Length: 59
Image 1 (cartoon, rainbow, N blue to C red):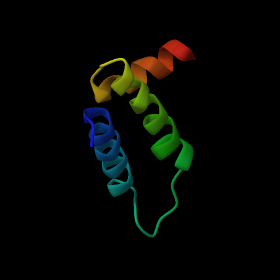
Image 2 (image 1 turned 135 degrees about the horizontal axis):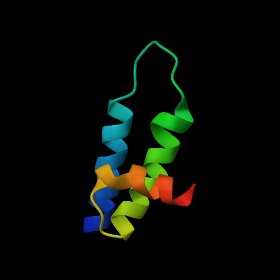
Image 3 (image 1 turned 120 degrees about the horizontal axis):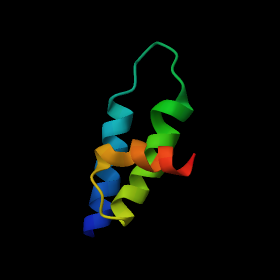
Image 4 (image 1 turned 60 degrees about the vertical axis):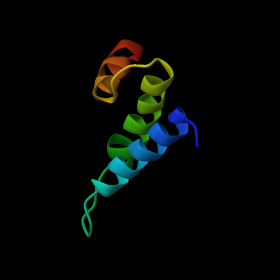
């Protein structure tokens, strides 16, 4: 498994593990946006916690 693949799998697990169980949540805000932008962080070699900056810049 390559380094980027490992990072992607870890990010997916972190996001999915943090979801509430038995209560509604916004899939777009909790998973889709951070996952997509998190993948860009991996490609750009940026820390994952900076994904909000990429969203702000793209908006």
